[in-house]
Image 1 (cartoon, rainbow, N blue to C red):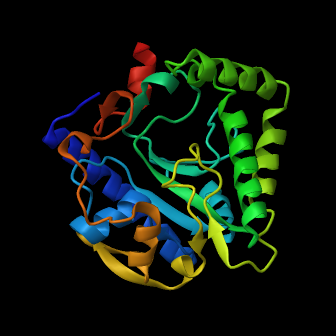
Image 2: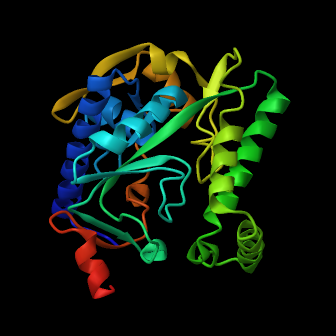
Length: 287
Protein backbone atom coordinates (compact mmCIF):
# COMPACT_ATOMS: atom_id res chain seq x y z
CA UNK A 1 0.00 0.00 0.00
CA UNK A 2 1.29 3.46 -0.90
CA UNK A 3 0.07 6.62 0.73
CA UNK A 4 0.19 10.35 0.11
CA UNK A 5 2.51 12.70 2.00
CA UNK A 6 -0.49 13.84 4.03
CA UNK A 7 -1.43 10.26 4.99
CA UNK A 8 2.17 9.43 5.90
CA UNK A 9 2.38 12.50 8.11
CA UNK A 10 -0.84 11.51 9.90
CA UNK A 11 0.68 8.08 10.61
CA UNK A 12 3.92 9.62 11.86
CA UNK A 13 2.14 12.02 14.22
CA UNK A 14 -0.01 9.25 15.66
CA UNK A 15 3.11 7.16 16.28
CA UNK A 16 4.75 10.17 17.88
CA UNK A 17 1.84 10.23 20.34
CA UNK A 18 2.58 6.59 21.14
CA UNK A 19 6.25 7.39 21.69
CA UNK A 20 5.35 10.21 24.10
CA UNK A 21 3.00 7.88 26.00
CA UNK A 22 5.76 5.27 26.20
CA UNK A 23 8.32 7.85 27.30
CA UNK A 24 6.05 9.11 30.10
CA UNK A 25 5.62 5.55 31.37
CA UNK A 26 9.37 4.97 31.31
CA UNK A 27 10.11 8.22 33.10
CA UNK A 28 7.52 7.46 35.79
CA UNK A 29 9.13 4.09 36.54
CA UNK A 30 12.77 5.02 35.79
CA UNK A 31 13.07 2.59 32.88
CA UNK A 32 16.04 2.97 30.55
CA UNK A 33 15.56 3.07 26.77
CA UNK A 34 16.96 4.83 23.71
CA UNK A 35 15.75 5.69 20.23
CA UNK A 36 17.49 3.32 17.86
CA UNK A 37 17.75 2.07 14.25
CA UNK A 38 15.84 4.28 11.81
CA UNK A 39 14.37 6.42 14.57
CA UNK A 40 17.83 7.35 15.90
CA UNK A 41 18.94 7.99 12.33
CA UNK A 42 15.92 10.25 11.83
CA UNK A 43 16.66 12.16 15.04
CA UNK A 44 20.28 12.81 14.04
CA UNK A 45 19.84 13.43 10.32
CA UNK A 46 16.36 14.97 10.16
CA UNK A 47 15.57 16.01 13.76
CA UNK A 48 12.48 13.80 13.48
CA UNK A 49 11.14 11.07 11.25
CA UNK A 50 13.04 10.06 8.16
CA UNK A 51 10.65 11.75 5.69
CA UNK A 52 9.59 8.48 4.05
CA UNK A 53 9.62 6.31 7.20
CA UNK A 54 6.45 5.11 8.93
CA UNK A 55 7.61 3.41 12.11
CA UNK A 56 9.41 4.02 15.41
CA UNK A 57 12.07 1.79 17.01
CA UNK A 58 13.31 1.91 20.60
CA UNK A 59 15.66 -0.42 22.48
CA UNK A 60 15.69 -1.31 26.19
CA UNK A 61 18.00 -3.41 28.37
CA UNK A 62 16.27 -6.74 29.05
CA UNK A 63 15.86 -5.94 32.77
CA UNK A 64 13.93 -2.75 31.96
CA UNK A 65 12.02 -4.51 29.19
CA UNK A 66 10.79 -7.16 31.62
CA UNK A 67 9.78 -4.47 34.12
CA UNK A 68 7.83 -2.70 31.36
CA UNK A 69 5.83 -5.85 30.67
CA UNK A 70 4.85 -6.19 34.33
CA UNK A 71 3.97 -2.50 34.63
CA UNK A 72 1.88 -2.59 31.46
CA UNK A 73 -0.36 -5.32 32.89
CA UNK A 74 -1.82 -2.88 35.40
CA UNK A 75 -1.05 0.63 34.17
CA UNK A 76 -1.93 0.84 30.48
CA UNK A 77 -5.21 2.60 29.76
CA UNK A 78 -7.90 1.08 27.53
CA UNK A 79 -6.57 2.95 24.49
CA UNK A 80 -3.25 1.11 24.50
CA UNK A 81 -2.06 -2.49 24.33
CA UNK A 82 1.42 -3.88 24.88
CA UNK A 83 2.04 -6.96 22.74
CA UNK A 84 4.86 -9.24 23.83
CA UNK A 85 5.90 -12.86 23.64
CA UNK A 86 3.64 -14.91 25.89
CA UNK A 87 0.85 -12.33 26.31
CA UNK A 88 -1.90 -14.79 25.37
CA UNK A 89 -2.96 -13.87 21.84
CA UNK A 90 -1.51 -15.15 18.57
CA UNK A 91 1.07 -12.36 18.54
CA UNK A 92 4.16 -13.97 17.06
CA UNK A 93 7.11 -11.56 17.43
CA UNK A 94 9.68 -12.04 20.18
CA UNK A 95 9.93 -8.32 20.88
CA UNK A 96 7.17 -5.97 22.01
CA UNK A 97 4.87 -3.51 20.26
CA UNK A 98 2.93 -0.74 21.94
CA UNK A 99 -0.33 -0.35 19.99
CA UNK A 100 -3.00 2.33 19.76
CA UNK A 101 -6.33 0.51 20.03
CA UNK A 102 -8.23 3.36 18.33
CA UNK A 103 -6.36 3.03 15.04
CA UNK A 104 -5.88 0.46 12.28
CA UNK A 105 -2.74 -1.05 10.78
CA UNK A 106 -3.79 -4.19 8.93
CA UNK A 107 -0.89 -5.98 7.24
CA UNK A 108 -1.90 -8.16 4.31
CA UNK A 109 -0.24 -11.39 5.42
CA UNK A 110 -1.31 -11.29 9.07
CA UNK A 111 -4.67 -9.52 9.03
CA UNK A 112 -6.43 -12.72 10.18
CA UNK A 113 -4.11 -13.28 13.15
CA UNK A 114 -5.97 -12.97 16.46
CA UNK A 115 -4.22 -9.97 18.01
CA UNK A 116 -4.33 -6.18 18.14
CA UNK A 117 -3.82 -4.47 14.77
CA UNK A 118 -3.52 -0.81 15.79
CA UNK A 119 -0.67 1.51 14.85
CA UNK A 120 2.42 0.72 16.92
CA UNK A 121 5.98 1.41 17.96
CA UNK A 122 8.54 -1.42 18.17
CA UNK A 123 10.27 -2.09 21.51
CA UNK A 124 13.37 -4.29 21.28
CA UNK A 125 15.01 -5.96 24.31
CA UNK A 126 18.81 -5.82 24.42
CA UNK A 127 20.74 -8.82 25.73
CA UNK A 128 24.37 -9.56 26.55
CA UNK A 129 26.35 -11.59 24.04
CA UNK A 130 29.55 -13.61 24.62
CA UNK A 131 32.91 -11.97 23.93
CA UNK A 132 34.10 -14.92 21.86
CA UNK A 133 33.40 -14.26 18.17
CA UNK A 134 32.48 -17.89 17.50
CA UNK A 135 30.19 -18.19 20.54
CA UNK A 136 28.65 -14.85 19.62
CA UNK A 137 27.69 -16.00 16.14
CA UNK A 138 26.40 -19.33 17.45
CA UNK A 139 24.28 -17.53 20.04
CA UNK A 140 22.78 -15.07 17.56
CA UNK A 141 21.98 -17.66 14.91
CA UNK A 142 20.55 -20.06 17.48
CA UNK A 143 18.24 -17.34 18.74
CA UNK A 144 17.31 -16.35 15.18
CA UNK A 145 16.39 -19.96 14.37
CA UNK A 146 14.08 -20.14 17.39
CA UNK A 147 12.49 -16.80 16.52
CA UNK A 148 11.93 -18.04 12.95
CA UNK A 149 10.38 -21.21 14.34
CA UNK A 150 7.98 -19.15 16.43
CA UNK A 151 6.97 -17.00 13.46
CA UNK A 152 6.43 -20.10 11.32
CA UNK A 153 3.42 -20.99 13.45
CA UNK A 154 1.61 -18.29 11.43
CA UNK A 155 0.99 -20.20 8.22
CA UNK A 156 0.33 -17.13 6.09
CA UNK A 157 3.91 -15.97 6.72
CA UNK A 158 5.21 -19.23 5.27
CA UNK A 159 3.63 -18.81 1.83
CA UNK A 160 4.71 -15.28 0.93
CA UNK A 161 8.11 -15.86 -0.66
CA UNK A 162 8.32 -16.08 -4.49
CA UNK A 163 11.00 -18.77 -4.05
CA UNK A 164 9.62 -22.31 -3.78
CA UNK A 165 12.76 -23.32 -1.88
CA UNK A 166 12.15 -20.69 0.79
CA UNK A 167 8.48 -21.67 0.98
CA UNK A 168 9.47 -25.33 1.37
CA UNK A 169 11.84 -24.51 4.24
CA UNK A 170 9.22 -22.36 5.94
CA UNK A 171 6.61 -25.10 5.50
CA UNK A 172 8.94 -27.54 7.27
CA UNK A 173 9.47 -24.98 10.04
CA UNK A 174 5.70 -24.58 10.32
CA UNK A 175 5.17 -28.33 10.78
CA UNK A 176 7.99 -28.48 13.34
CA UNK A 177 6.71 -25.46 15.25
CA UNK A 178 3.26 -26.98 15.59
CA UNK A 179 4.78 -29.92 17.47
CA UNK A 180 6.03 -27.60 20.20
CA UNK A 181 3.61 -25.95 22.66
CA UNK A 182 3.51 -22.21 21.96
CA UNK A 183 4.16 -21.12 25.54
CA UNK A 184 7.08 -23.51 25.88
CA UNK A 185 8.66 -22.19 22.68
CA UNK A 186 8.19 -18.56 23.76
CA UNK A 187 9.77 -19.20 27.16
CA UNK A 188 12.67 -21.03 25.52
CA UNK A 189 13.33 -18.13 23.13
CA UNK A 190 13.51 -15.63 26.01
CA UNK A 191 15.68 -18.00 28.05
CA UNK A 192 18.15 -18.51 25.19
CA UNK A 193 18.24 -14.82 24.21
CA UNK A 194 19.00 -13.74 27.79
CA UNK A 195 21.45 -16.59 28.50
CA UNK A 196 24.45 -14.28 29.00
CA UNK A 197 22.72 -11.52 30.96
CA UNK A 198 24.04 -12.81 34.27
CA UNK A 199 27.62 -12.72 32.96
CA UNK A 200 30.01 -9.83 32.52
CA UNK A 201 30.41 -9.30 28.78
CA UNK A 202 31.64 -6.32 26.78
CA UNK A 203 28.87 -6.15 24.20
CA UNK A 204 25.17 -6.71 23.67
CA UNK A 205 22.70 -7.03 20.80
CA UNK A 206 19.07 -7.31 19.82
CA UNK A 207 18.94 -11.04 19.17
CA UNK A 208 15.17 -11.56 19.01
CA UNK A 209 14.57 -10.00 15.61
CA UNK A 210 12.73 -11.35 12.56
CA UNK A 211 15.69 -10.79 10.26
CA UNK A 212 19.38 -11.57 10.35
CA UNK A 213 20.12 -8.65 8.02
CA UNK A 214 23.19 -6.50 8.58
CA UNK A 215 21.29 -3.62 10.12
CA UNK A 216 20.04 -5.79 12.99
CA UNK A 217 22.84 -8.33 13.35
CA UNK A 218 25.00 -5.63 14.93
CA UNK A 219 27.03 -6.01 18.10
CA UNK A 220 26.58 -2.99 20.37
CA UNK A 221 28.38 -1.44 23.30
CA UNK A 222 26.45 -1.54 26.58
CA UNK A 223 27.20 2.14 27.09
CA UNK A 224 24.76 3.00 24.29
CA UNK A 225 21.94 2.22 26.72
CA UNK A 226 23.38 3.60 29.95
CA UNK A 227 25.28 6.71 28.80
CA UNK A 228 22.61 8.77 27.06
CA UNK A 229 21.77 12.34 26.12
CA UNK A 230 18.44 13.98 25.23
CA UNK A 231 17.92 14.69 21.53
CA UNK A 232 15.10 16.39 19.67
CA UNK A 233 12.81 14.15 17.68
CA UNK A 234 10.03 16.21 16.11
CA UNK A 235 8.71 18.47 18.91
CA UNK A 236 10.07 16.67 21.97
CA UNK A 237 13.29 15.37 23.53
CA UNK A 238 14.03 11.65 23.90
CA UNK A 239 17.09 9.70 25.11
CA UNK A 240 19.67 8.56 22.56
CA UNK A 241 23.15 7.03 22.97
CA UNK A 242 25.71 9.71 23.80
CA UNK A 243 27.98 8.10 21.21
CA UNK A 244 25.22 8.06 18.59
CA UNK A 245 27.75 8.58 15.78
CA UNK A 246 29.50 5.29 16.53
CA UNK A 247 26.17 3.47 16.99
CA UNK A 248 24.80 4.68 13.66
CA UNK A 249 28.07 3.99 11.87
CA UNK A 250 27.98 0.41 13.13
CA UNK A 251 24.42 0.04 11.84
CA UNK A 252 24.52 1.96 8.57
CA UNK A 253 28.06 2.98 7.65
CA UNK A 254 27.92 6.49 6.12
CA UNK A 255 24.53 7.23 7.65
CA UNK A 256 24.42 10.90 6.61
CA UNK A 257 24.31 9.94 2.93
CA UNK A 258 20.74 9.79 1.62
CA UNK A 259 19.68 6.62 -0.24
CA UNK A 260 18.69 6.79 -3.94
CA UNK A 261 15.26 8.31 -4.48
CA UNK A 262 13.72 4.98 -5.53
CA UNK A 263 14.70 3.56 -2.12
CA UNK A 264 13.01 6.33 -0.15
CA UNK A 265 9.82 4.40 0.52
CA UNK A 266 8.26 2.56 3.46
CA UNK A 267 8.60 -1.21 3.12
CA UNK A 268 5.55 -2.50 4.99
CA UNK A 269 2.97 -4.64 3.21
CA UNK A 270 -0.19 -3.03 4.59
CA UNK A 271 -3.76 -3.34 3.39
CA UNK A 272 -5.60 -0.83 5.60
CA UNK A 273 -4.24 2.10 7.63
CA UNK A 274 -6.65 4.34 9.51
CA UNK A 275 -5.54 6.79 12.20
CA UNK A 276 -9.12 7.61 13.25
CA UNK A 277 -10.86 4.23 13.54
CA UNK A 278 -10.12 1.02 15.43
CA UNK A 279 -9.07 -2.10 13.57
CA UNK A 280 -12.09 -3.79 15.18
CA UNK A 281 -14.30 -1.93 12.71
CA UNK A 282 -12.47 -3.52 9.78
CA UNK A 283 -12.27 -6.95 11.41
CA UNK A 284 -16.07 -6.96 11.66
CA UNK A 285 -16.27 -6.11 7.97
CA UNK A 286 -13.84 -8.97 7.22
CA UNK A 287 -11.64 -6.79 5.02
